[in-house]
Image (cartoon, rainbow, N blue to C red; front, side, top):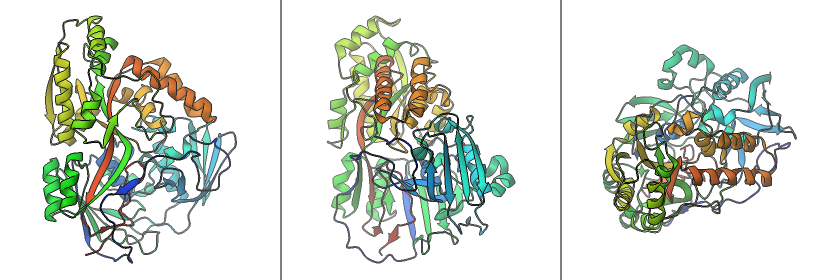
Length: 514
């Protein structure tokens, strides 16, 4: 759980341990001195949308922004605390109404211009804008101001319990004010940051290439000359490219690929409890505006079968919308389980007692989600509901969700921090992305989100988040499938790749031992 916000110079934030860690299943190489040079080629399932954090909503863009931009603070690798990044230290008032951050000296953007307090104020003023994609994360922040050339002040309208976790997210990235003003609405194609790498080129639909920032503030880093993100939408194609040596690292590894990857002498990285399988209903489409219909589908999900058949033991049946590694996760809030009799009873009380037909969108090339959809379709058929599975190219699917041009989507959620304010904020605060693009509106739920955001007592905060999880299990605006391990795989030559506790990665410490 979170400690109360108080005066804090640096470092420790979270008071409870987090049962999440990166595990290397194949033997790690003996530690050696990092070698400079080389190009790391990464195969990912989808392309980016933008490199403007103001509008970002997809994982590939988020991960790329984490490599191009720094933030004031960063989440520690073990998920237990917050560490300095562009801020050397900070002090949060005991009442949680003000926080001052002292900036690191000598930081430059990748073009050699110095980072100033004005750049930080500009970036974070955009971040707290409630019209931005993630402005809700900072809703209690009234203003970000410059105290002096080395100090930034946050002033809050209410105490803000998750301030530091929010500032560790991609949404709080720091970038050049002058560069943004130069490019305007095209700034997402022309990023200028202070992190280890800078944009070289972006061939949309094919690859994003980053090169070493020659002005990076961490002396001697990064070690790599270049990082290339290739778009490879098919799970099997990514595996084959890794095992053939065409790429060095792949994301979105499926559980059934682990043995083959290890058998080829490559290494697996696993982070447990950070990914939650999620089904989202568009309540603008009838009959998904009805609670009995949504909950009937939720009770028709055989989560144990999904964990066994799809994930080979690298997943467990979810008991909350929150992934199990999230703080204030509560598995005892009337969790939804597989119960076809209850599903039939709920459907019988709806406007569609005899069943109906609908289409569910799934990301094409994602074998795990496709199999989940097939298991669900088979169960729904037993209660009279026909679900047609519609594969959609992964980048396009994100766009379809963002524009709310879908009926039901099947996918997953990944936290950016272990604090629940992000997921439950975007889901239950209907002013945030229209209830995560679901059109779910509940004043009861939204008021709990706002109350928890300003509650500094962790015991009281737990009670509020437990109530939110009960509402989700009652109204089924979204439903959950399984808590999955996030899996990466890399060639043995990839050294010091260390995703943090939420599966987010950057590459300032990575080097190639070839």
